[in-house]
Each structure stands twice: as structure tokens, then as C-alpha cells.
Image (tube, rainbow, N blue to C red):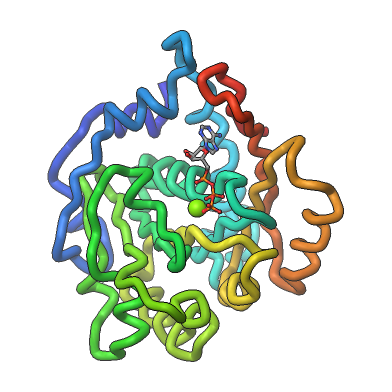
Length: 262
Ligand SMILES: Nc1ncnc2c1ncn2[C@@H]1O[C@H](COP(=O)(O)OP(=O)(O)OP(=O)(O)O)[C@@H](O)[C@H]1O
Ligand SMILES: [Mg+2]
């Protein structure tokens, strides 16, 4: 059983407070068993290898963030999960990466729903959220600590996208966002902060967001996203280092069990 599985099995409800830089004001209840059924079992009910695959994905990211065997990367604790196009699996990968890191015991994780125009972290996790990132960007006096939600999964917190706003995506590239990120990193100096984000080829703000990150994980829907589109997306990232590429083996027929990672 993977670390993540083990931790999720415990289903402790003491939340992340105590482990985290700033105690969350709200706590969300995630249906852990439902998630495991949906994501870690195939159509026949057999365990999938996904938890193990995410362990392998997270290892080099944590090494670079914490400076294990190498100098720690500047802003290495900020990890953005992105992709060229919509529906490649960014949200799925950012949630699973965050959960896998939280299962490590040593690290708290804040998952930021930065896909502010089409937030889907709450939907995927089956929780309801209200205030979040956009509220903080619109009101400097609102601290990130006031909108971060703890969960029933130890060391795992969520910073929701927040209020719907017609210029939500544009706000990602604002000076307010830059200040917000500095504030967030100061509030959670020991945590790993994972960002779900909009697709690179759809919004230019995603690229600006990337410039504030220490590590980028690029999700590619294997067999779907054309090579030149992937290359163009990589070009958009400019000098921001891509820490890794996740080949997400997508399939129209999920029940047939074609999902997986490489
Ligand atoms: N490896 C996987 N295993 C199981 N389900 C997956 C996998 N990858 C993606 N999915 C599912 O496919 C759907 C699309 O994935 P997801 O929402 O993560 O993509 P996205 O890139 O975030 O999309 P968007 O650009 O719309 O935000 C979701 O329902 C997700 O749960
Ligand atoms: Mg998404």
C-alpha cells in the first residue's frame, strides 16, 4: 500500500492545524473512500498503480524544493501543474500530487485552485468552497490565512479560487498576485504549495503565473495533444524551468481503465 493510501485510510479528522504555517479557519470534509474508489480502482475493482506513480513524480520535486542532494531551488516549494490545452488532467494531477506529498508526514501542502475562470478542485473533491484567491486579490486586507481551508486529510489544505469575477484570469498576472504569492509563501514557509492552473495555450496569464513558480509540471494527454502544440506551450514558459512532464494516458472510455500516468 502506498504512503498516500496509508494516510488516506486513516481518515483522521484532526485536520492540518498544528502542522501548517497558519491554522486554517474552515475545514472541508472530503469523501476519501469515494476518491479512492474513483481514482485508485479500475473497472474491475483492482487497485491501480496511480498512487505509486505519483510517489515517483513527487520525489524529484520534493528533492528540488527541499534541497536534498542539490541546492534548493528558488521558490522551489511553489509547484505549478499546467498543460497546453484544456482537459489534459491538470486538476487531477495537481490534486493527486498534493495528496501524495501530504502523505509524506514531513510536509504540509496547500493546494491553490488558480484555474480561477473554471475552478474544478471543489468539484473533483466533492466539497463546497466560498472565499479564496480572487477575494484576496480584490482586497489586500484579506489574508490568505483567512481563506485557506483545512481538510479531514492530514496536512492537506485548499486555497479555493474564490468569488467569480469577469477578469479573474487577468488578475493572475497582476501585481496583486505577485504580492499575494509572497504573502502566501511567508505564511506557509514550510509547506509545499501546489497550483492547479489554466491551460497555457488558452490564457497568457498562465505564463505569467508560471514565472512566479520554482517548478512546473507539464501534463500532456498522451496520444491527444499534438507535438507542436506541446512544444509551443513549452516555448511559452520561457526561462521557467519545467521540472517534469507527466504523460497522462487519457481515454474517452474511462471505465475501460485506460487512464494512467507515465
Ligand atoms: N490519470 C487519470 N486517471 C483518472 N481520471 C483522470 C486522469 N486524468 C484525468 N482524469 C479525469 O479526466 C477529467 C479531466 O481531467 P482534469 O479536470 O484534471 O483536466 P484539466 O486539464 O484540469 O481540465 P481543464 O483544462 O478543464 O481544467 C476529470 O474528470 C479527471 O478526473
Ligand atoms: Mg482543471
